[in-house]
Image (cartoon, rainbow, N blue to C red; front, top):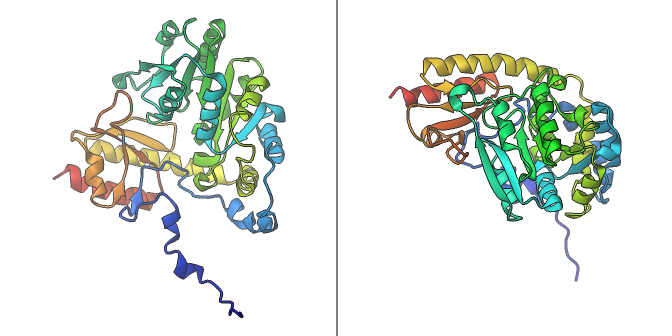
Length: 360
């Protein structure tokens, strides 16, 4: 039987394409997602068609080319890099490889640490920071690091507070952890939003500390959330090999590896990012002050805020604006919310909407 071939109209078949993302149709502006406000680098967009001929091929399971680029950037060896399907993939692989019995988390911070630890029945200890002191970590943390601890999590800059740990202090923490055979996990997914990030990053310390592993990703820095691309760095190559065994080999797609390489070769993208963030953070902080909303200075591309009213996030959502509800962060409540720093026009629209809510 002859069948007439008819070209499928993709636009008519799947409308809109946002339906294959987590975007909500009722949200017109999403300030809960703190990726780079500049969006996907132009270097990635322009060069993606080059790999159309490779989309039917299996990806390199070892991400060798991407690892070489990362090793060159951070001045380490390629075998000290392990790439994954986003930071979460690497976090879970690490937890499954180590299977810690007891872990300490500096709070408030990214909730996924505790969630991942509980999958291996790890006892999770919380070390709360004081908001009135700027959520700053100090030397009191040393008293919590002992022989009963297997793993310590630090997020630097911290999410959601935006606080930054001084590199010299970080070295002291790493030394204390080494003394007690504790694996120090440093999440640096927001580190490169800091213009002088090399002065703060722990990546250059991996040759000095075998008990140190750094998790990072392209998700936030280069706004590549849809590509799912992360990497971790450690001088403990045995640990990296163990992580590789905790999941499938082909976990980083061809487009993701290519996007990462392109992003690393973009020389102007981050310079534009620094300029925008510096200006917009200052402007937003001044606006919050006029609205009597407490906002903490941040080294990241986001701001933690505290209003006088509960559930500001739900009131904004009714206006189609989504912010991060921080009530589920350890130690915070429904008066806290986190916003991403976006372009000035977007930030103005957000402040105008917020002003209508808090001044009612």
